[in-house]
Length: 78
Image 1: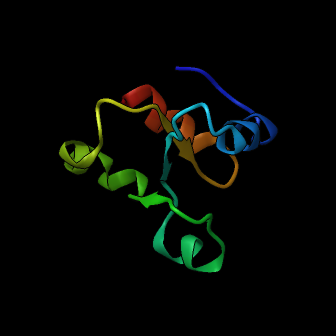
Image 2: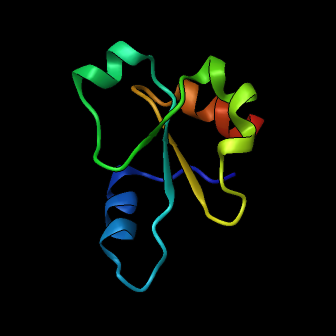
Image 3: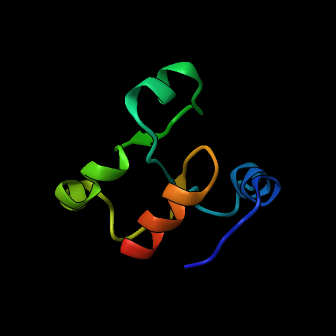
């Protein structure tokens, strides 16, 4: 697992020579309705264990949340 800054993610997404990661948003439904990035895969943190089969194993996954705590926990779990 590796932590990346928003600017690093933006550069990654803007790089046509690098495959885009799966953007796994682990926030709650109401948070995603308030603000979200285009193209996210939304699975609230508590639902991730039951949704493991839906996550691709052949691509990098970037976990996203509001403050970084939930995304860190999900990243360690994955």
